[in-house]
Length: 144
Image (cartoon, rainbow, N blue to C red; front, side):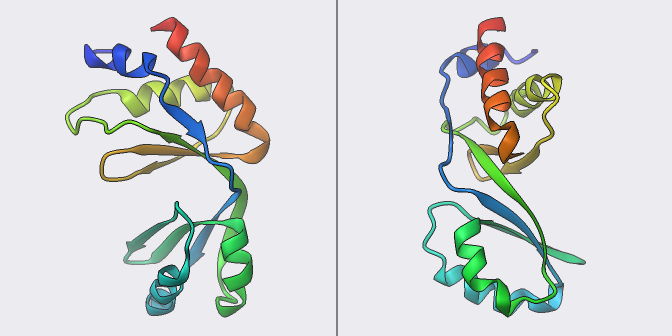
């Protein structure tokens, strides 16, 4: 860990697992307008939309998606996932935060999907791996 702030930030233990189960949804780019209309109706406190030239990706609570999925018959979905949110406004020049968290979780044999937002990071793990991922983060704190 090269950034001197990293240890003190990790020791704050400011993360939590969101209570909802989430799905990862892949849509065709032509479905963008419909996806944006759907997102405008989603009242969940956590969701994400990423537009790429060849794919739209959404992270939504499973319950929100279940009621809206019939409108997207060609959607590809994966899940359920749980989201671990890091409740810290991370400095934009911080080096190694996600690498350290990801390495600790990887060493526990847990695959992750990283989600980055404006000032916070999040990690998605398959629901059966949630306890192992949280234990790995706790162990990371004791090792820094």
